[in-house]
Length: 119
Image 1 (tube, helix red, strand yellow):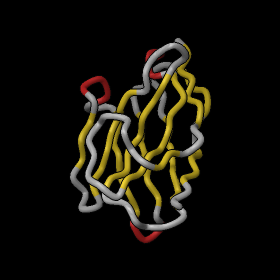
Image 2 (cartoon, helix red, strand yellow; image 1 turned 45 degrees about the vertical axis):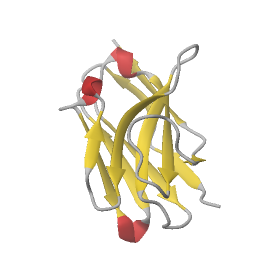
Image 3 (cartoon, rainbow, N blue to C red; image 1 turned 180 degrees about the vertical axis):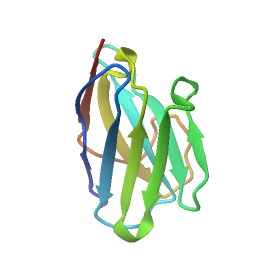
């Protein structure tokens, strides 16, 4: 059973930056990704990365967010720059043994970390 632990959320002003981290208990995935959700809305994919480094981004974050991984540390990162109030959400890390894209159908999920961007 893969366990995922996120960290790095917080509050920042519009235009600011944050870096999220997600550490996995074991290295068994082919996909890892970041998703976000606000109350009353469906969870949406933000960015995903294949074990080999191939990445996919949601249009809303292209050019502002960067997903990366350190396989030796079993850690996933999301560097978020030029943050906007609409980026405010609970951010979740997810992993799967299959190659998945931005749909939130991953097998393993973290508990989430809150990101709040004020105007």
